[in-house]
Length: 223
Image 1 (cartoon, one colour):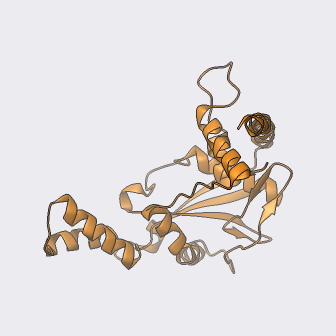
Image 2 (cartoon, one colour):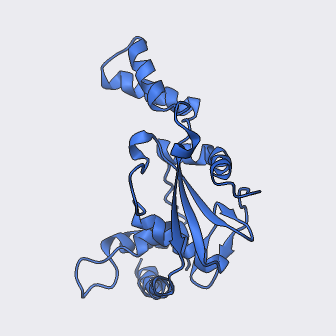
Image 3 (spheres, helix red, strand yellow):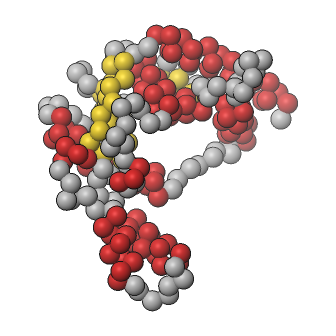
């Protein structure tokens, strides 16, 4: 059993008491892995937020490149793994390791944050640093226009919320403006957090994976 870097935040969630080794969140994730391993039951998660992230990834990478002047960067397709974790960073060249997060709207973009808003992303990037043997990575939040089909879904959702059956132009304009950021300067639409490799954290991840395997094997035998 290996843990995906994108799930390290769930695994590394602190338990409520000192006597516990794995948190409820970590155990819940491991239980999902057991069902997938034993019965092929895979928990799929998608939402309009993840849909935007996937659809806008290339555009966001280009935006980051334009603003930061990183040279020639491109979407990474190489999958990495070691004895404990697996993952596919968004960008991985000889010079740069980078992960992209597309904010759904302006209110979820970290305009004023000085530290990574989500600890999950910190652990995810520590995993990527471990897998690629790099010393630092960039976590880049991007504010790009929401794809048209997702905006249309939001327009319908807003109509339903206001019990509107017929098209309301004010509602449409409100939603479309909420998901368009062409009026913002490019430099405002990229927020970068530098993440430095932390050997202590990597050691903690390794130990937590080992504990997760013990729990995983116990569940496999009892289900």
